[in-house]
Image 1 (cartoon, rainbow, N blue to C red):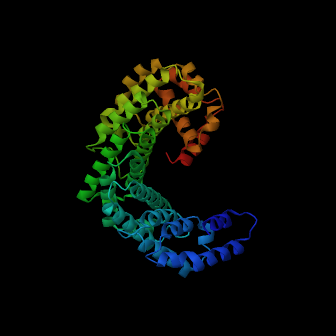
Image 2: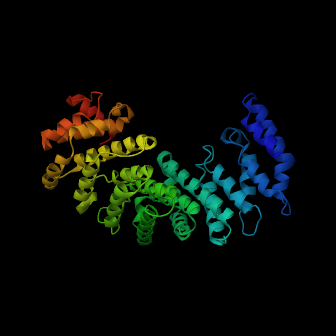
Image 3: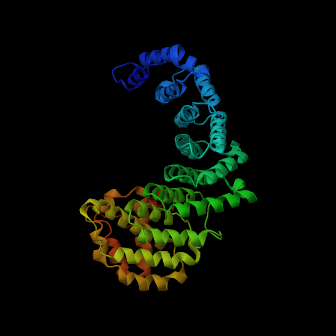
Length: 416
């Protein structure tokens, strides 16, 4: 019946009503009885089948059917239940369904189930901890989505529960690399989700510090997927104005580590994400005394001739583009006291070096926000140093707007 259920979901020639009736028959005839039988050895398989239903079919179920499925799965996450790993994984799928992801009670119940599973899990049970940590990552994705779409969800979400999620994530961060990859993803999302009133509580500031330090450690050690996720998580966290490096104890380590990663890491995808993380501080003050080091490092990297295998050329181009965007970001934020260092270091950055990384219509690869950022930087840099303005002009073969009206429109679009 497992194969039949999956095929019914993936079939394209069936009407939704046919697929829905097929699923209702499977649920009532086979799956639900199995999940209600504590002695059944088929519970993990039944959970795996439910995870293939999909949002379209699940959203078409009657509310009582949805509730029955969620209740049965939550009951299976208790300690010493054979289907705990499969049930947690299934909940990790369901919690991302648009039809129920803003259900505060279900999200909270899923969070508590994940916490309980992680707290009671023997670290030697790799399958269980891997599946539960994966579900934690999905849950955290849902929190971020709700933050963008449903402000009341954020205000109603329990600070105590958020603290427990951070705590269990930090305690699980020393697991093997596959688990750690999920944990750092979750930490980045949880920090991005945090609201100001939560951060203002003393113990949450400690959670933030420990989480940032954990992510920074993960960005420089372990398998590359974990490092990539860690840098992405840092970028994610720093998008939250609440998580600001301004006057933070962890700021020196943040800039030192990320600057080192963009220079020394052999993996270009990791370096790209580290560059994106360095681009998140929203004001000159956030960079503090690290502005000059970051600026100089980026200028030196852009002035170098890349020497990589042809298979990596695409990633090299993406990295150089992100470095240029980071430079533009810093140009837009710089203060009067930065100009001496900036102008002296710009001699390293020639127009040809920028032109080389835009030989395939770089501007076509930029988002509207990035185009507006470059436009803004060009305006600023014309006042800073005319020679560098020439290099900026070569950033994009496609003509960027120069008139005041277009410039202002670009800034409005980019919310700069």
